[in-house]
Length: 382
Image (cartoon, rainbow, N blue to C red; front, side, top):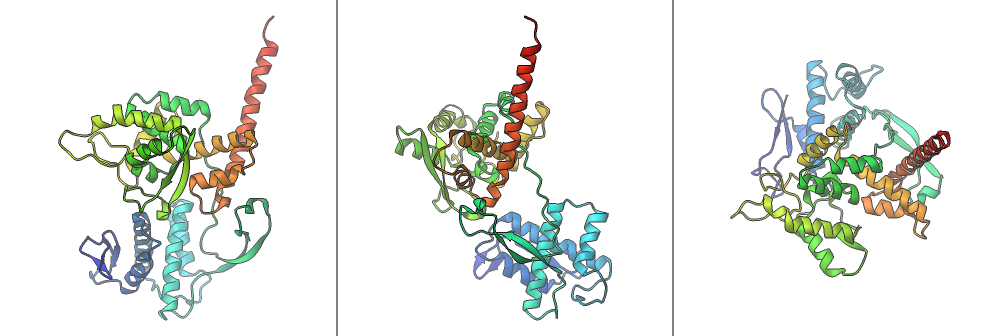
């Protein structure tokens, strides 16, 4: 089996799709059913992420390579054995290669979608998928976190259940230590902006200078200023699934960003070269990739200096945890969870709910630290 990636000359319905995965047999002939599925599934308007294309291509390439290595036919869905082909592949990935749960979930998802496509087009007689009945929380309103009602639904039993580990976050002291250890002014601004905005890595990498300038120009006097993250406004901004959203940023943070732009950012732009529209540039004066992998390395390297395993999404978790804790203390009329969900760009408030557990953990630790301080005072001389 061979996995290759389309160039800009490859077109679907007249549209260039560079990076589209293409799978070939050993004979270099097209693996027609898989490629038909990939074209159908990945060319939909809702799937524009390069990561999704790579994940789908890699998943099906690995699955068909597994079948080929074990002399199995992907169409043999009623093989009369206790394990389906997908179950056998799942066991192989888990036992032979120790794939992470999320990696396995993603691969089984794309393989299952391929089989649904094949069944719909009459290429197989039945689906090699075990369905399970599971309980699903209601998603009828923004207030669903207050409603424990739900319903029963069919779920793909081949996909491992999602491991619901709590996200990791930094304490306030750890955040300060991470910022202070950054001697490079550009790196310090990246960390500070990430932990004070809660943006995703891709959003940090593509955040444009014009947003800072426009916000300060149009909202003079306000403490918190609304900024619209809109991938369709021509600024180059990228968001998850291309969805626009409005977020609030403090004037203090925006003024710091403005000073950074004026005093430091320009030093990274070589003389005589056109300036990028993006806020953060690498040491060569180039914008970071849309995925922001360069930002990942910066944050991880800084974390190592203070003895912590830190990554950009942990800074997002830290923002969410401390923001929710602060909002709960204020006891405002606005639901803190709804506000945070909108800030983070979550499509479902159930995703935001996990930070309630983090806040409980954060508060518990704060109480214990305060109690320890009081104990030390009580046992001191005098």
